[in-house]
Image 1 (cartoon, helix red, strand yellow):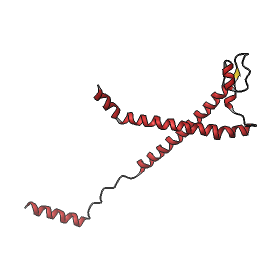
Image 2 (cartoon, one colour):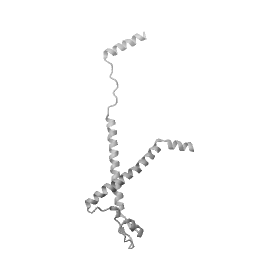
Image 3 (cartoon, rainbow, N blue to C red):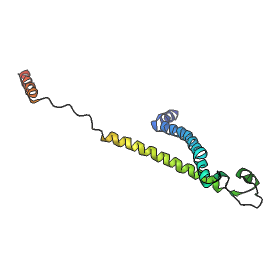
Image 4 (cartoon, rainbow, N blue to C red):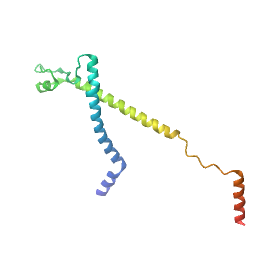
Length: 141
C-alpha cells in the first residue's frame, strides 16, 4: 500500500494540482487586494463619499442597532448583503483574469500550431542523384 501511495503522489497530476492550489492561494490574496485596495475605493469615489460595501447590512432582529457589520453581528442576526457584493466582485475579477490567461495560452498554442513544421531537407539536384545511382550500381557489381 505504501508503494502504491508513493507512485500516486509521484504522478505529475498530483504535483500539478498541489502547485495549482498553492498558486491559487497566493492569487486569491492578489485579487482581494485588487478589489479592496483598488476597485472598491474607485467605486466608492464614483458613487459618492467613498462607501464600503462590506458594512452594508440589514438587521434581522430589533436588537441590532450597531452602525458597522462586525458590531451588528455581535448583537444578533444580520443580512450582510454588502459582504456578498464584495465577494461577487472578487469572483468576477478573478474569473476575468483567468479568462484572459486562458485566452493568452490559447493564442500561444494557436501560434505554435501555425508554425511550419521543420522542412525536410531539399532533395539533391538531379545530377547528384544520377551520380549516386551510378555509384550504387557500381558497388553492387
